[in-house]
Length: 373
Image (cartoon, rainbow, N blue to C red; front, side, top):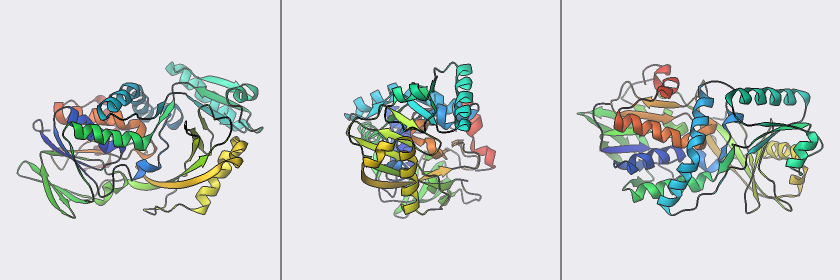
C-alpha cells in the first residue's frame, strides 16, 4: 500500500463486507458500502450463524488457525457492535454436540477429540447414554458424541444489520441497488464502475462473495477464482422441551433459538448461480434432522432459504492485496465460514490497509496463490 487511505469503498454488504466497513469506519476512515442487494441478503441471509471451527475446519492447517483465532474475538466483537449500534445481537456460546450414528463416525469423533487435546481445546467424548443425558431428544440410533464447549452461534442477519448501523454511526454511507462491474486504477485513485455510474476512492475492498468473479479487475483476466456453492437452510418451529445447544451430524446441523425456531442446515450444491430452494434439498435436510432428533417430525415447517457461498479450489478464503490494482484488497472466498471469520477478516484488512501491517496469517490466504489478481 502506498499511503494511508482516507476514503475507501467496500464492495459487498454481506457479513464480511459490513464487518470490514465497520472496522474501517471506527478507525476514522470515510467508507462507502456498495451492493445491488439490501444488507445481508446474499449468502448471509441463509446462514445459521454457527461458530464451530473445531468441526468445520480440518484438524490442522491454516483454516483451523484462522477460524479459531476469529472465534476468540467474538465475545468482544459482538459486545462492541451491540453497544455501538444500540442493537441486541443474539449470541450464544452454549457449545456443540457432534453425534455419531455408526462406528466409522465414532472413530472420527475420537480422532477429533485427540487432535483437540493436542491443541489444548477442551472436548468431551460421550457414549450413547451420556450423549442422551446432554441432549434428551437424541434418537436411538446415536451411539456417541463429542461435546465442545467453546462453540456457539450468532444471529447472522442481526449481526450484519448491527454492523451497518454501527458503521453508519461512525460516518459510513450505504449505496444500495448498485452493482459493481469494474475496478481500475487511474492517477492514484481507484475507479469503481457500477451500473449506475462511477465512483472514486483512495482504496477499495472487494467483499462481494460469489459475485467477485463477475467483477473486472484492472481490465485484466483471470478474474477472482471464486464459484458459488448453493446452501439451503430450513426453519422449523420446535415444540415442547427446547434443544440445549447446536447438534451436529455428518448430514446436517441443528441450531435452536430462544423463540422456538430451529434452523437446519445446510446443503452443499454446485448449482451455479441458481438460488432456488428445491424439493430435494428440503427433503434431505428434514430426513437428516429427523435421523438424529426424531422429535423434529412434530415440528412446524416455517420455510427455507438459499445462499450462494463463495468457494475457492482449496476452500481457503482470499484475503490480501491485489498485485495488479494498487490499494485494492480482497476479502472473499470464505465459503461456509463467512460469519465466523468476519471479525478477523475485518481486523486483518484494516491493519493492512491503514497501518501497512501484513499479518503472517495472510500468507496462507493471499490472492497470489492463484497468480496475478
